[in-house]
Length: 455
Ligand SMILES: Cc1ncc(COP(=O)(O)O)c(C=O)c1O
Image (cartoon, rainbow, N blue to C red; front, side):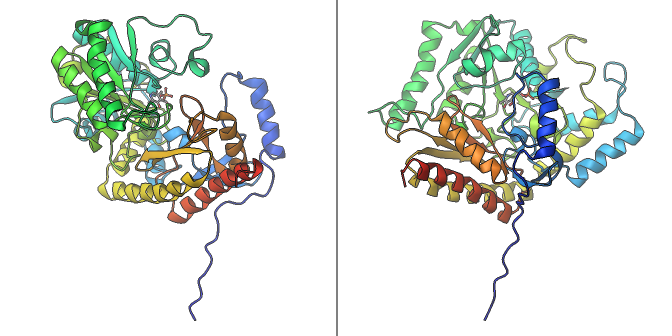
């Protein structure tokens, strides 16, 4: 008779989380770092490889937060580590404003080629996602000589003054920071989970599209708008895929009124959805795209890639910075982008997304699971107090995260109402590790329901 060998689990919890060494480090963190820089778990990392994270107390966990989508290629992949080491042995940085070196040129050439849009492109490299968005918007303003910007409810674009102004979700991100930048118009983006009662999905989508036209008549002068900025799949806002007809309408409005269309793919891009960029699922190309997070495999690097004529509009010296185009970060990014753009890697991501989708669809049976959604391997579960009212339940969400983390997976919340758990495991996670981690999360969901006598 054939005997099946049991697969050895990856997760190994040998002490409470946080254990004694972690607690010591957390106390130092609390004393040394400002409390505004919050954390979603109390895991203190000792080392990480692939999808596996080991903490300083000897616990082994699976990473389902992926550094909020920064670790699509996995922790410390060999090709990235070797490329960084090679560059470190040559030189660390001489500054692009002073000298020229190959790494940023090679990376820009790759991004110009790989980003959607069949037109000449150029790439500006910078150090963070926020900086990329800020640059994109500033370049669009310079190019059009217009002051206005259109952004959307639920958007997250960063934490600098301008990008915070572009960001939605007031209480968590903007409250207390005083006045925001001017000439920013925020419109509603369709959320197909929250279709108003009594309206069909199609009617709601048509209505959202119609509201765009009306906004350009009732309160926005289209000839004052430099750019429309949108995440094709809202990240922080709760993995809300923006429907194709809505994106198409934005493309049309931009073409009609000479507005620059910017897609912020900092969270949804870089292979996460099974294509290198999320907008490639719809065949809609923006004029500019912002890229960060997984492009650097954990190194701080970001990019704005856009139509050459727009990118070239700025006078020499008008953009750039000391660290932009850091050869170390570029070396990492070149390797990461090679991996993420490979068709084989994308096929595997698609399969992984399908595995996640199938498992998560079964979670709809739980009374407090309002929705499961996503594209490719960018997946999320939304918790509500009641399936009909869809009232968000952020406390339950936190409780489930705590339980799952204690049992060995790293997680982070998302959503305008902080009532969602987003799953962004490294795309190199094995099928068994994925299954194992999903079981830990489902168990946490089940326990929370049992506690409330709901199952
Ligand atoms: C869509 C999007 N835009 C911009 C940013 C800001 O990037 P960073 O944190 O690198 O400044 C983020 C970060 O989460 C993001 O998800």
